[in-house]
Amino acid sequence: MADLFDKFDPAIAEVLALSGNRAANPVGIVMDEVHSPTEATINGRPTILAGTYNYMGLTFHPEVIAAGQQALAQFGSGTTGSRVLNGTYSGHKALERTLADFYGVAHAMVFSTGYQANLGICSTLVGKGEYILLDADSHASIYDGCALGTADIVRFKHNDPADLDKRLGRLPADAGKLVVVEGVYSMLGDVGRLTELCAVARRHGAMILDDEAHAMGFFGAHGRGVFEEQGADVDFVVGTFSKSVGTVGGFCVSNHPKFEILRLLCRPYVFTASLPPSVVATARRAIELIATACADKRAQLWRATKRLHGGLIDLGFRLGTDKPESAIVAILMPDQETTIAAWTRLLEAGVYVNMARPPATPAGMYLLRMSVCAEHSDAQVAAILRLCFRARARGRGRGARRRVNVAGSS
Image (cartoon, rainbow, N blue to C red; front, side, top):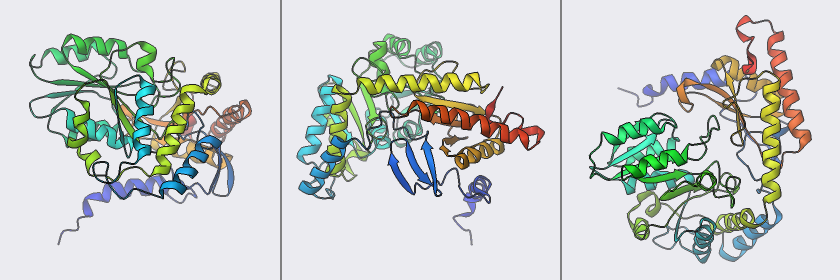
C-alpha cells in the first residue's frame, strides 16, 4: 500500500541535512525570550537579532502595547468569525480608515495575514481569459495567488521593463491584464524599477499591483513605499503588518470605485476568521506612529543600513546589491554546506541572521540575509560586523579548501 508521505522523502532528507547534529536548526529556531526589537535569548545565549524584518522597531513601543492591551480587555481575545459574518468590529473599520488615510486612497481592505492579501487579490481580481504578468522573483504568496486563480500566468525577467514590454505586446490587446511588481524584493533587497515598469504597463492598458511589504514605513515622503518615492502610478498596493508595523495581518488599498465588491468575492477574505481586536489595535497605533512620529527612526534605520552594508563590503564580503538599496543586506554564499556552517558560527557567537536557500532564492542562490532595524545601535552594528569577520576567520582556520570563501568573501 502506498504511503502518502513517501513523496516527501527528498524533503525529509533536506531537513536532515540542514539540522544534522547541530544544537540549532536554521529552519527551526526557537526564541526562548525576546527582550527588545534587537535582542533575544536563543539556546540560552544573549543574541543580537539581525534577521527579523522588524524594520521600524515598533514591537515594544509602549503606545503600541498599550493599545493592544486596552482592546484585549475591551473586546476579548478574538472574533471567532470572518469579516463578512461576525468578525468585523469597530476596530477593523477604524484600522481600514487609518490605512486609507495613510495611503491617501478611498478604499482599504484588511486581511488576516500578508500572505492572504496577495493570495486573495491575485486570485480574485484576474480571471479566466485574462492575464497576470509577474516578476520572476516575485514572493511565494504572489505565485500562490496566481495558482489559486484561473488567469493565464506570464513571467517576465526580474526588474526588466523591456522584457515586460515584449511579453505584454504578445497578448491580446482587449484582454484584461494585471502586472504585479514589488517595491523591495525580499531575498537580495534590491528595489523595483517601478516607474519604468508602470509606464510599460500603462502603454499596454494593464492595471498594476505593487507589493510594498519590505518598504512600507521608510521609503517615500510619507513612508508609503517605493512607489511613492519613485512617483510610480499604481492601481493597488498590497502590504503586511508583519514587517514595519510589527504585528500580523495584511491589506490592499486602492482608489478603484468598484473595489469594495472584492469583500464578497475574495475567498481568502471571506472564509478566514478576522484578526483579533488586540492585533488590530496594535497595527492601527503603529501605522499612526509611522505616519506622524517616526522620522528619527527612519533616519537611524538608513544610517545603520549604510554602515552594515558598507562595513561588510569593506571586509570583503560579496553582497546581493552593490549599494544599500533597502534595509535587507544579503551575503552571497557558495553552497548549502558553507552557508549552514557560517550561519551556525554566527548564532553561536551571538548573532541571528536568516539562512535563505533554493527554492526561495532567485537563481538557486544561497544567502545569509540580514534585515536592519531602526533600533539597532551603532554598537550592535559594530558587533555584527566584528562577529561576521570572526565567523569567516574560524571557517578558514579549519583548513577545508572548499570553505575558503566562508561567509561569501570575495
